Length: 199
Length: 199
Image 1 (cartoon, rainbow over the protein chains, first blue to last red):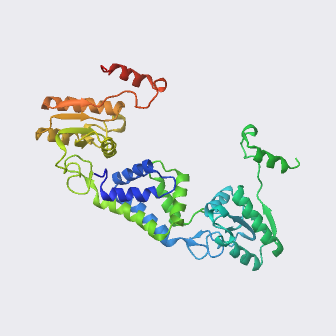
Image 2 (cartoon, one colour):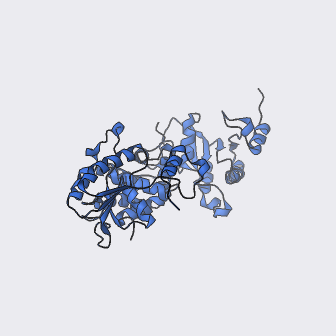
Image 3 (cartoon, each protein chain N blue to C red):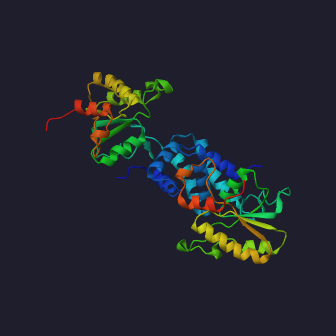
């Protein structure tokens, strides 16, 4: 005999497909949905359907967008001469949170990872080259992750972009603010030493 | 400027209402849904709506049920003379997984917790008394959680049920199987000593 009625099994299966949701979490979520009032469960279902219907990729930077262009690309107050290249839309959010950057973005939608079969042609690299070709971009800040895939992607982007006459920079690696020297890994500490600055 | 488009904000808000889902998890889930194909997001939304539409409480035991009676209550091969009283539907699943119990259940839908304003009248206690009153039940196994609320509820149920002429038993407390004596808390170890059995 199955432990759950069929509609519950179906919900559990769908929940378990989500990242970071195992059988126990799926059960907790399912029981929460079962206990919730019909409206709040309906709102969740609507939000899922709605986000898929109304959100697509920005035609210029490939961030998520409601309209043809995302809110950042269509904001005339932003500096279009400086473009920050990131892997994922969530990286745009992370950089926006700093409040330090007033330029535009280019979301590659991943990083080069031969082991996962992801080469430059799976990413929005060609679109970046086209965008540089249109002119108006002075600097490219490459803010891919500081790991093997991100560094490979950064090198690849830099090699493509430099001959097109733009300045290419890379975000700094070093000790996290508030971090502890003692607990830093040797690679990070090595980078921090290498990239030391005059005081 | 908001970091996300409105439909994404709405999805994030709805996801964060779920138990154990904080802002970071909500973001991870939302980005997964955004990256997923339309069908799989649709299936998740459908499963949520469907579970709310088709699942209600069993008229006899108050477990989740698709029909008027749940699958366990409508199974004629189960022993209707012995009823296991639990707090939540998930406890039914936990006991069913043991494969040790062939009786029926009664789901109280919570435990007595004055601090949360939950008294016996918020639980399915009256329905349990009515059910005993109809006859045919010989034993009530009280399997509420072994914590303050669960023990209080167990005592309350026992005091109500005993005068009605049914045998009331409580599941054993003790060391978990595979557990380590050294790491057992003193209350559990005390209970395990108290409830020792002849070998």
